[in-house]
Length: 335
Image (cartoon, rainbow, N blue to C red; front, side, top):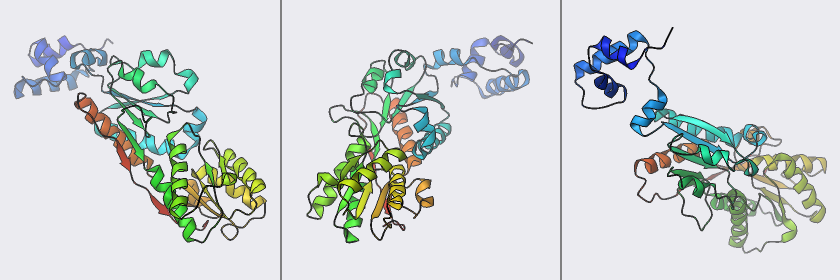
C-alpha cells in the first residue's frame, strides 16, 4: 500500500492543498472548521507528514545534536554522562525536540561531523567534554548553528556555556578536610586540558590558601577521571609522601580507585587517611566506606544546557550569559 498524500488529505477534508499544508505545518490563517476537517482526514488516512519537507517550510528540523567528545567506553561507563543525557533528553522532549547523540573523540571529529552539524540537519548543538584546544564550537557557529557548551570554555572564547562551580566545590572539600584536622592533604587532580580538571585543582589550591597553606607538589598527582588512574595516582602518592593523611580526588571514580589502594596498603579510612571525591555518583554510596563527596547534578546541568540553547535559538542576535551551578558537600564515612 502506498502512503497517503497531502492531496488525498485535502480532498477528504474538502479543502485546498494549501489549507491542508498550513494546518499540518502549524499555520495560523486557517478557520477552526477547516483545521478540524484536516485533522480528522489525517487521522482517518493515517497520513504522516514528510519530515524533510516540513523542515524546508518551517526552516527548522526540530532536532538538536549532543556531541560528547569521549570514547564509547567512557560515555557508557561513567554515571555522569548517563545523568546529563537524561536531563537533556527530558528537557528536549518537553520542548517537542528530537535528540541526536554523537560520540566523537578528537581524531574522529574532522570532516564528517562538520558537514553534518549544519542547519540542514540540526537546529542547535550541545557540546560536552571538550578539551581546551578544541575549535569545534567555532566551526559549528560558522555554519550559523547555535551552540551551547557544557563546561566553561576557553577564556579567550565567548561561548554560551553551562558549568558546575568546580572551584567552589573543590574548596568545600579541602575546607572540610582542614576542619577534620588533616595536615597533609593530597590531591588526585583531573586532566589539565579539561575545565573540570583544571578548575577543581584551582579550587584545591584556593582551599589550601584559605587555610594558610601552600601547595606541596609531592602531594599532587593527576589522573584521567577513570578508576584505574585514581588507583595508579594513589600508589604514586603513597610512595612519594607516605605521611599524607587526606586526599581530595577530582571525581568519585578516581576516589574509589584510591580507596582500593589504601585498603591494600593497610591504611584505614578515615582513621589514617581521609578521602573526599567529587560528583556524588551512585558509586559514592556503595563505596567501602561510603564516600564523602561534592554533590553536583548532571541532570540539572543537562536541563540548563537545553534551556540556554533554546533561548539562543529564539534570539541568536543577543548575548547569552554563561550559567554556573552551585555545589554542596555530602559527608559520609570516608572522612
